Image (cartoon, rainbow, N blue to C red; front, side, top):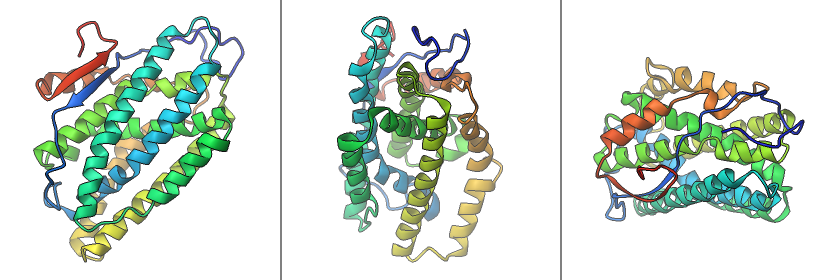
Length: 299
C-alpha cells in the first residue's frame, strides 16, 4: 500500500509501491473446548510447550494490539486514508477471532494443570498502555510485536516441518492464525507511518519487544516442562536444539526476516510472501467461513 500525504513525516520510503494483500475475517471450523492431547505436537513435549507458551500470551497481547490501532484511527488525516481505515477494521476483526480461539486453547491448558505465568503482567501492561502511554508509542510496540508474529506466521506456512506432526485441529489453528497474521502484517505499520512514526521509535520498540518476548516464551515453556518433569530430559534438550538450530530451525528462518525490521525504509511487504497465502487458501477450502473481506471473491 502507498501511504498518501506522508511528505517528510516519519520514514521516507521514496516512491515505491508496496504490495498489499487482501484481508479477510474468517470463522475457523475448529472447536478446542472439547480438549486435545497433552502433547499435541508429534508427542514432543518441548515443541508442544513452545507453541503453548505463545498461545498463553496471545489473548492479552492481541487485546493490546487492537486497542493501540483503534486509538490511532481518529488521529489519521480525514482525507486519503479510507482504505487504511477499512484495513484497520479487518485487522481488529482478525485479532479478535484469534483471541477467541486461543482463549479456548488456554482454558484447556489450565484444565490440564498448567499456569499462565504472565497473564497478570500482560493485563497490567495492556491496561497501562491504553490508559497512560502516548498512542504513537503504544502503536510502535504493536508494530514491533506484529513483525515477530508475521515472521512466525511465514515460517508456519513455509516450513512444513514446523506443523507436519501437529494434530489436525491444531495444525488448522496455527496455519489459519499464520495466514491472517501475514495478510495484515502491514496494517499497524502503515498506521504508524501515517502518524509520522520514525525509525528511532520503531527501533526502540523492537529492542524492548525482542527482549520481553524471548523472556516470556522461554520462562513459560520451562515452567510447563518442569510441571511435566521433562525440563532436564535429554530428549527435551535435543528437541529444543533441533527446533531452533536444525535444518528447518527457527533461527535460520526467522533471524534474517527479524533483522529486516531495523533497516531504515523497511516495509513489511518488502518480504512479499503472498504465494504462501495462495497455497494456504487452496489447501484450506472448507475449513473456514469468511465473515468480511476486502477480496472481491471473499477468500
